[in-house]
Length: 282
Image (cartoon, rainbow, N blue to C red):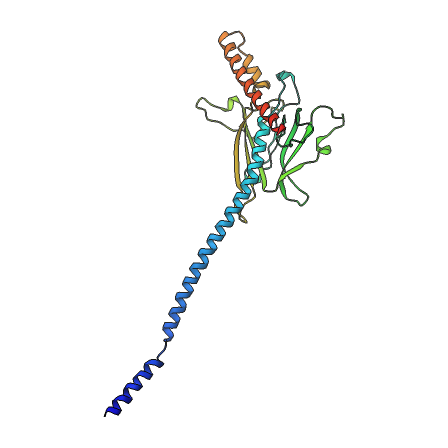
């Protein structure tokens, strides 16, 4: 009797030791492991993708900030002779070519200082005309580019389109748009109606809005947009502003107001020119 009981106990022990996982338990463990692995992978992939997009955005903004800051400094250093409307060839020129990310406007103006041309430029300290635009490089890629040439001392057959080679600034800049305002474009409430066209080629606008469109971070994505509003300190010297200030020459109050504003603007113009010259010295 005791031997039979001992045999049955030994059989149960051997059966318990031989018992393993069922097929359902194995499949459940594999499914759980797969879910955990998938969640871990997608989390890691999202973090890496976000980091790469952040790095690309930082690089784009670095190039874009450099170009737009140089452009803003060059516009603030705009030069116009104090003879006002008696001078020709110093006006602001805008060639409108579309809007949005595919825009490719061209602007041209006369300036002083090293902005956009570099401190080693031999004519940085003298009045020189600058063209800013987006053009294709040798590889057919659109890039921000600039042309610059001195106004004085050029031969009679000088043609900047043929004789001046563009200098490419950044391959990240794929589009450029510019809008202008004159005094009548600002209403009594201070609201501004920006203009896409500029027909006064011997005058200067009060201010310009410049927008750079940078290469999209993702394929088929929207371009990165950088905008800046830049006031032209010497705009009052060109035709519209000198004419406006001299309309009411017989009224004392108007004369005083005009004289005060002219002095203020002259101060701003001097500061802008000094800042441009300072950049040249650096």
